[in-house]
Image (cartoon, rainbow, N blue to C red; front, side, top):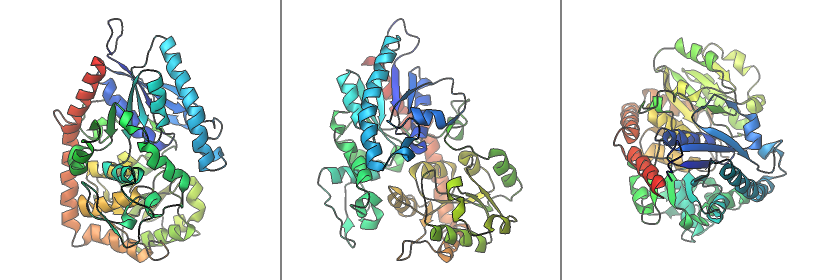
Amino acid sequence: METPNRAYKAHVLVLPYPAQGHINPMLQFSKRLVARGVKATLANSVYISKSMHKDQISTIDTDTFSDGHDDGGYDNAENPEAYLTKLRDVGSRTLASLIEKLNGLGRPVDALIYDGFLPWALDVAKELGILGVVFFTQTCAVNSIYYHVHEGLLSLPLSPDSTILLPGLPPLESCETPSFVYAYGLHPSFYDLLVNQFSNVDKADWVLFNTFYELEKEVVDWMSKLWRVRTIGPTLPSMYLDQKLKDDIDYGINLFKPHSTVCMNWLNAKPSGSVVYVSFGSMAQFEPEQMEEIAWGLNQSNYNFLWVVRATEEAKLPNNFINDTAEKGLVVTWSPQLEVLAHESIGCFVTHCGFNSVLEALSLGVPMVGVPYWSDQATNAKFVEDVWGIGIRAKMDDKGIVRREVLEACMKEVFEGKKKNEVKMNAMKWKKLAKEALGDGGSSDKNIDEFVAELVRS
């Protein structure tokens, strides 16, 4: 709320789940709030705070809470269940302490914007008498599936040949639902994490989604009957979209150091639309057999490629692959993905279909080949191909492997096949709509304005 002696309209504390793909969208949303006169403090875990490569984000304060693993983070825990239990228990205590500390420093918190993965944060907000705002980093479609599971409206396990019919969604095969749903019982801790996002959502004052209305309007309309839902995305840096925030050219936080100069110099030497960009995000860990198939699929193709292979995954590459393909390929441990996708030499993006990557490609008009790994990615890939029409999915064999000839055929289809023009036309359509959503009077722009106005009044 606005008080006479403050230089800002309201103060929000922003609490992402401790992972790159969750920090980025919440940080970007914070920048939008700051541009509207709201003070934002981003709270990362102690370990994340120590690990990240951070640009100077002068407009946003940063602070820390503890996930109970200050020296090693998630990788230091015995297992996922142990990490998530400690994250909840220690996180709740240290979050409450942080809010009380900020209050004592004369910077009282008016609202807590918390990641949907952290529903316990809403309990802390309510105990301390501040607004609780849930922020979902995955699509409305994916979260609708989890909601139906939580409410017992979608019974598990799913039958392999069943068709799932849910409000606002296209018919889905069981394998097109999130992996924690269709492979029920395989990852119980992550299943609980995702489904329990809805354990107390009815108590949230606002429900925000990193998407835009035009992208998911049917399911947004359905969800809006349940909660105070607002779409506020896509959360790319402003200079890649509406260009209102002139200093907002990058996310500002990286858990991996990108090889920016190497990548951009290499791309500058390549013809327009000639390069396949390949990246499977910050978490996917493919089997060596799958890595080998991807490697040979790229090698057999006629296309230049830039492939991000994290340092922990490099040993899975075939012997001498990097040297043998150096004429047409570049392999790096991390890239400046936005800069890469925006480069004119990029003609196709082979992606795991994590939603941040999908939103980036969609917002920049880059066609995709989907190679989903787990979590929400199979559902996102379904939408990329069949709903948004901006790419195609690479089909797995009976062993769950995308074979080299399949990958090669998918890339060829995007570059040269029958779907080439349709996919490119749809990519341009969604690029325009994404930009308009955050432009003056766009759906997300109006929603953020409304949220700030309510924040000031409350």
